[in-house]
Image 1 (cartoon, protein in one colour):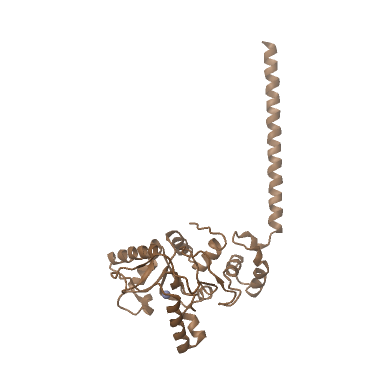
Image 2: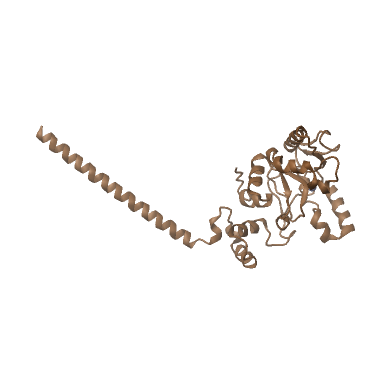
Length: 287
Ligand SMILES: [Zn+2]
């Protein structure tokens, strides 16, 4: 019996010693890991902390930040990713993600003249002028939204929606003839650069007041509070002209789906910024 007790004691001691050694190794590993992480942060540039950092743009971040020292680091990375360090309509590229609800068309990303979105459908004349078309998913969401507005005694009527490249071309050329290129560019898109060609956006009015005064209507207030719940965002907000490239348009709404619309609404950012941070080269649609 005594022998067994001694043996147990020995085993117990070895066990304790083993545990202490394992614990010390663990502490040592944690420390090593910690210092190596600190080192890698120290050698990273301040722009690299964002997961939408693009190493190809390193020089552009630096020079854009020099020209705009008051911008936050996050905005520098975001704006350069959008392309804002170059003037509008320069370094333009064909937009990827055709027929996706997160497709971006702006003054840097365009659609081919032949592009016609899939599944265009007429919006019910209950909520639109006749012949207004949207991509089915946006059309369904729009009708749901307009119907909910009507239940609250607010009218939302679509007065322009999908536009073909050729139609936009006529429109833009007419504006240029009347006002000149510079003025026309502030309120009308060049053909191929119009979001209306995606079939995912819609200009609305309240059925009474001219759409340019939509901002002054109760329907507009309703849209401010509710549009995102149906996947729509105000695409060209007031005060964001330097990012979107367009004057404030209280009447122009873009379908992006409910998740993205909620994120953009909650963060009070533009779709251009969202795209630069979450979609561009990554397809990372997040909440
Ligand atoms: Zn519009």
